[in-house]
Amino acid sequence: MITSLLIANRGEIARRIIRTARRLRIRTVAVHSDVDAGMPFVAEADEAVCIGTAPAGDSYLRQDRILEAARATGAQAIHPGYGFLSENAEFAEAVEAAGLVWVGAPAFSIRAMGLKDAAKARMIEAGVPVTPGYLGADQSPERLAREAEAVGFPLLIKAVAGGGGKGMRRVDAASEFPALLDSCRREAAASFGDDRVLLERYITAPRHIEVQVFGDRHGNVVHLFERDCSLQRRHQKVIEEAPAPDMSDAVRDAVCDAAVRAAKAVDYVGAGTIEFIADGSQGLRADRIWFMEMNTRLQVEHPVTEAITGQDLVEWQLRVASGEPLPLRQDALSIRGWAMEARLYAENPATGFLPSIGPIDRLRFPAGVRIDSGVAEGGTITPHYDPMIAKLIVHGDTRQDAARLLARAAREVQVWPVKTNAGFLARAASHPDFVAGRIDTGFIERHASDLVPGTEPPLAVAEAAAAALVPAPTGDPWTGLPGFRLNAPPDIEIDLELGGQPRRASPKAHAGTVVVADGVAFLDGEAWPFGLPRTERAGGESEGDGAILSPMPGTIIAVNVAEGQAVAKGETLMVLEAMKMEQALLAPFDGTVTTLKATKGAQVPEGTLVARIERGES
Image (cartoon, rainbow, N blue to C red; front, side, top):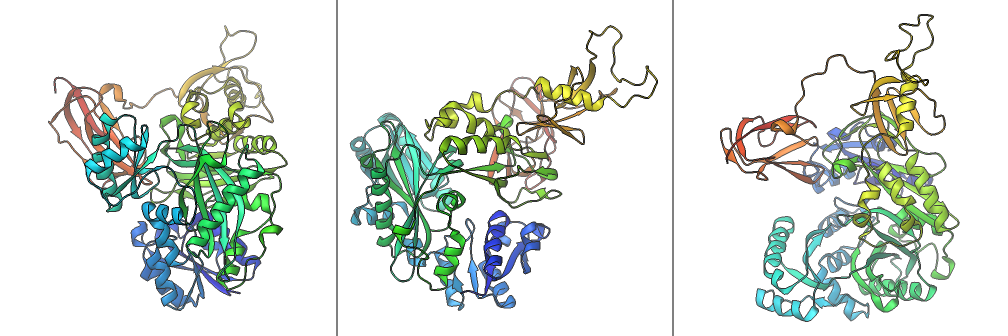
């Protein structure tokens, strides 16, 4: 067994790996950027090495510095986690060339599954069903247009080297194809340095089904059943579950057997995931489920597989990397109950899920559920990395039990002042269609109005906030009740500010539902600051008077205008980037740029005035 392990990652996955390594008495080494020096994973490792500055390209993606840290600390093996270098074949080779153990997929397997067209061709050879489409070498616009007609509309154009939803376009008619092909190719070239594309039939009621596979160095490959990851937003997973809803034993056998064939076709070793796209319009059928791609690493959603199988997948990884055979054969694995996982992000659903960055003064998680988190109270969400705060993982006897537990867990989350999607998750997990298993990848978009309602605080929150503002009796009837009105109705009402807006409410306790702490009220995963009305309001800026405010903290990566320049309504003034997300700031009306306070490369906090437009002709 490996005795010392360097973890080439950060946050919650680093803590997850450390937890298993500690149980197996394996010494751990953390590597970190300068801004991560105070993170929990750094403190929990047996040893830690700073490998660079905040940008991932200067730290977590620096193969040379990671290898230097391994040599300096005497680490025997490197675990890449997921993301960063986890699917980098060159890094896998460099680790082994340095005489270290690579706790991941072989470089050959990574390369074989790295390009979508080559991977699909290999799957066809292995007898694994693939989505109907075109993945040929002839990339001329004329050939692609002919193949698109043969596939039929709607269809998807997908970058061969794509991922994360980039380099993907839906085409509904032949007339749209040329322009969307050009657009897809430009994005693919910019994002991946490769403008080649493939064509796929578009599935109208798509389900995202993936199978956890595991191989060892002795030729054994097993599956640990399937997960359903259909609840997605912008092609990013939000809630995952295992097993998949409405999957019969016969369909499960067919899909999982196909996944094992896929893994064997690339001589797979370690943890991997075979991803399938399913047409759920007629229920899950074996002849309507097709191979999509393979992730040659451990997945973010691996805890739901652990919950239903009772296995520790990180331990499996470490044992396999040490040369041991798989801990269990296929006939010893079974499904127990139902598990769900929700990704708690630092983001604001009310503003289109823009990232929320800053200190975490309060962080409370629900009791009785598994929490995999990379941050702690008193920490900070920075703009440099993924904004995930934690994963909420629940396990119940039935799917309905798991959905109820997940909704309750999300409702009990308390985070401040960073904004989160906890309330959104609670509403999604308790939505009647979700509970009934009526899900596909369009679920969130279809139910957006239910999942992201208005921002008006409920009456119970206003009443609890009012109660918190009423001080203990002093004996002075004139100063004892701030905001008290002589002509008030029988129930006393006070004036307050709640969520930045004036509100009037009767003080009432709501113990067990609304939690009030340090001037913030928490209910159902949401949070609202409150206080007494301010007698003088600071002169603020608003977009109604032409002020352009930064909608999130981030970096200005482009400035397209200058002071004195005429602009048209909807014209892009500048582009702000945070956590891999770009946000274009647009002119609210025709006018002239009279103030410009943004410069390329500048860091700006949320709400900062970056420009002002005066109305007029453009």
